[in-house]
Length: 253
Length: 205
Image 1 (tube, one colour):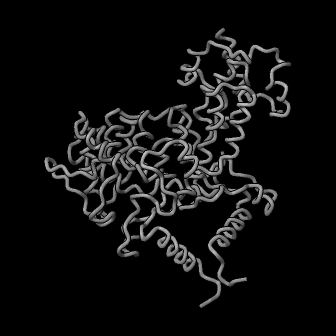
Image 2 (cartoon, each protein chain N blue to C red):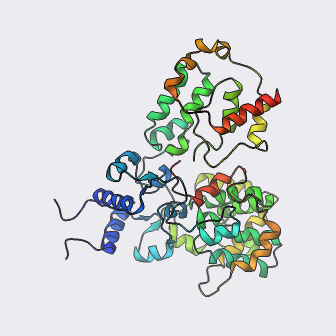
Image 3 (cartoon, rainbow over the protein chains, first blue to last red):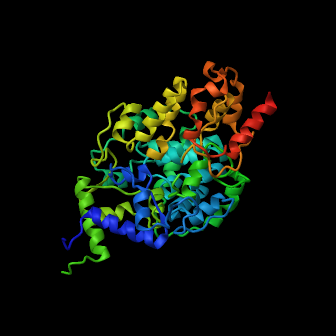
């Protein structure tokens, strides 16, 4: 046997170790698999059970993650599921200082929740969908638009194409066609400037030295985010399953 | 060098291979995919770029995946993105053999595409449609839903067009092709949400 394991052997060893430790079998969702460039067939729980006959597929709470309350609130997702959200908090504070109305402060606070807790690609569209049942339609629209508008300068408000995009994507990067087409539609929309305001307050909000607490926006959330009585994920809304996906991201079915 | 790599050496080796596969682009994993592995780290794109000078963030097609056409069809997703769909194909054929109408065959063909690519959360309307026609849906239960609520918009929408009964459903139960094979199909008791739905339909008649 080689002393250096192949990648797939390493993956198998890691998986076997995890199954022994956890007594449950985690089967990756197809989209998680694809995001790693893996086009192979899905893992077979029966195979894992041969190694650990007591193991079950994961259907309840994930013991590796912080427990969520039965009726989770937006604040609970910030605390227990989202990654560091200083950028969102800075952006919201910046919007307050810029004299934006409260609902736009909320839009700035939530504009990147999909990168903070859900899916990165098309985060504006995902983020807007996540909050749509609970916020003013203008907030939803602006969150969706900000992802698109970030690629297009607007001199009237001093918004330039971000330097970080040049560094990150290259000088010759051009937005995808659907982004370009959405930009044309959004540019003429009555709420264009709301989406634009998110991009304005977005760009200045990556200061490592500024610390903002989520509690600063508790009242803004309370007044502008219709927290469902049964909790996010359990309110029978069209997006409830998306919030449940964050509560139990590795649930088997 | 030790013949057993340390964890960080392994990570480096894995990362190098990844970069090569990605043609020197940096793929940052989404938070959802990371927490599905119990990983609470938050990748930092700028730092990753510092570690890999010259590399750009992945914004276009993923070179590790089969290329998709510009205007992808459902068939393209079956061929180029979904996991092997034999269960779906078998399910659709089973529905066809049982004489189900084409849109039900299609529903069977697509019922698990979210598994291949959360199950059944949009299935209320389909359950109701099937029950209204005397068929017991075998769509997986929605495990987090104790019972279906009358508030569900999809239920209300479905009730309004619940009128016709398929000719095949008018057959005497013992002659119905699906009934005859029912024991083989599945033996479990009707799920509670189904009985709730049946009660709901009865109360509306």
